[in-house]
Length: 263
Image 1 (cartoon, rainbow, N blue to C red):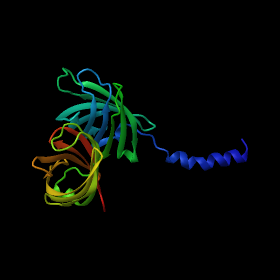
Image 2: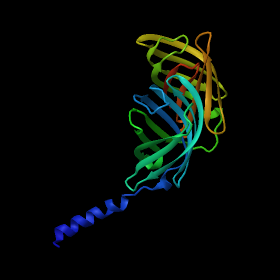
Image 3: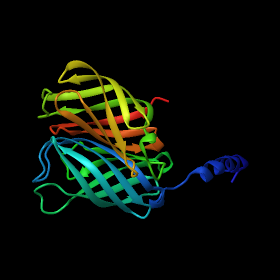
Image 4: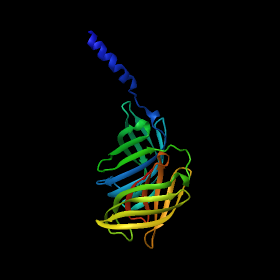
């Protein structure tokens, strides 16, 4: 081996030392999760249409997962509690299988996802591959605090929601989006200034209401834009720097998105 080759190898050794392989142990703790997409040609018993899901995922670092979530399935809103398994490969690619219950389906349906673990285990992005016929993808972001309270939603947040309204009272059927600024007081009250698009019709909004955060870092936001009360369900991630949120009541929509701290 000549001196040039030896020098080149020596220069690469520090880079090789920095390279780290992933394992199941790198995916451990509590994560906030946001799922969005559509069932285009779903399995029997699952209705076609848009779907969103927001939830809390606890993974054990050994391949096991426990999930508590709120689901909107073509506008029907349900609370869920189920489990699953995962495997993290040395290249940080991920395979996840969730055993998801659906109304009217006698046994939980195994859903297989593939994706990647990133940001030193703080984020996972996966897409549903089995059963086929969907565009569902999930983002999971680690929650850095073991216990939460209302003070973990404090200050100004940017809101970004999208999806579809299907049969929600007071809203036209069609695509929906909402962006804006929400100010939380850390004690259970908030105000919001937002811009919505309801099936292409722009609507400026100003509203306020209350919110409650539980110790598990999930929360509910209550307000009213009409005679019918609204409620968003959500989960905090990143120690309060962000959160995932969805329209939970009234039923009839599949709308979800993110809250990101302005600070």
